[in-house]
Image 1 (cartoon, rainbow, N blue to C red):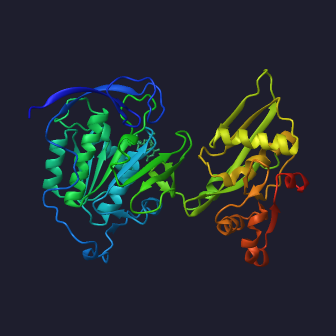
Image 2: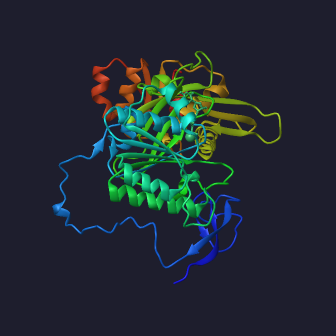
Image 3: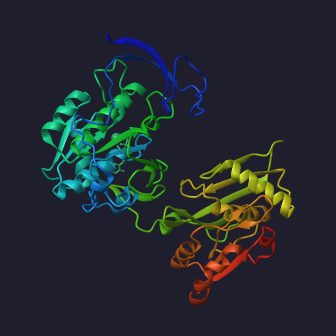
Amino acid sequence: MAAKNRSVFFCTNCGYESSKWMGQCPGCKQWNTFSEETVVVSSKSSGNAVHKGAVVVGLDEISLEREDRITTHIKELDRVLGGGLVAGSLTLVGGDPGIGKSTLLLQVCRMLSLDGIKVLYISGEESLKQIKLRAQRIGEFNANMKLYCETTLSLIEDVIRKEKPEVVVIDSIQTMYNEDISSAPGSVSQVRETTGKLLQIAKGENISIFIVGHVTKEGTVAGPRVLEHMVDTVLYFEGERHASYRILRSVKNRFGSTNEIGVFRMEENGLNEVLNPSEYMLLGKPTGVPGSIVSCSMEGTRPLLIEIQALVCTTNFGIPRRQCIGTDFNRVNLLMAVLEKRLGLQMGSCDAYVNIAGGIKITEPAIDLGIALAVISSFKNIVIDDKMVAVGEIGLSGEVRAVSMITSRVNEVIKLGFDTIIVPGVNMDDLKDIRDKKNIRIVPAYNVQDLVSLDI
Ligand code: TYD
Ligand code: MG
């Protein structure tokens, strides 16, 4: 059957396919993300992960004795990957341009090659000299690390099959070009087909492949979300470009738990691990000022202490302004409504700003109590004790609801030298042991009304 050209519209954000242009994507609800691409329809199917030599096996014949995990010697990364890199896996590393994706992967390549693993770093973005300059900042490399600057997929495939590396890095997927597809590099169909091909190579040759995917706000190139469903693991880099710390978050992991985070700091010699993130997140916390409190959120299995700041002030315009950085805007509005109704705080003519210090994003409801206390403290101009932490979810009737893993949270709070923690009253039973043994004041809160009587 002869190949036929067809014009299709794709959403560059999520990859939604449509035969006509649309203003808003029905898939991800983003506006102005559709772009037209020509796809070749042929009888040959592509992007199929099953290679020719595949054999059918029974589930009972598969042995799990040998754990095919490779450690990257970067603890924070191993943790996010679920205990190391799995052989033959496809990992997507997404993030804004300039956040540190290439730097991290170059460091991974360095550690692996020092360990005697054959690594191939394929760059479509930088020249060999540029990579060398970056590598010099990171440290010494050895001969197991090979570089290749190319964007044509067929050539890349040949080199991989010839060199037989164990780990490959593709930097970035948006620059790669598959000649079988007529659309430009970075378009949805190119990005998808190229990833399909890489998937075939990874599974067929048992090579672990890292794919770098840029997130772009303009929607001019296909974002990494387009290929989330195709790869085994999806990691996203978060963080403010001007702040030095970076958070690596796993949003999908076929070989481990999601929502684990790795914390790094961008320094002169590349990304360095932050071994005690709570301490790091609280650096520079002001003392003796209203509107600031520490709360504790669980990031995967790890408790993380963060500072919540609120500023409530009289509005200068008719309509009060509400703004929120680092947490859910609607949740903050809801909490303020609860405080107005249940505590009678008249904040209707006030602007309110809530900020999670450090630029990290936390959406866990367990920080509700912290947000509420920060807002009350700023509104009433009362300073909250610096050695106090608050955790708890707040419901619409003002009740303080239980949070998960309360003991890990309290232990982290003790470890960092705080002396008081406000916890949901319903969690008190779980804390019996700690209450007796450790030197910490645990204050139960059953309802937001309890916050008024607290000695803060
Ligand atoms: P990069 O890894 O190129 O980002 P991406 O691949 O995600 O686009 O990161 C580049 C930024 O990191 C750049 O602003 C310079 C900074 N950087 C350092 O601060 N220290 C270093 O050792 C390196 C290599 C980069
Ligand atoms: Mg890069």
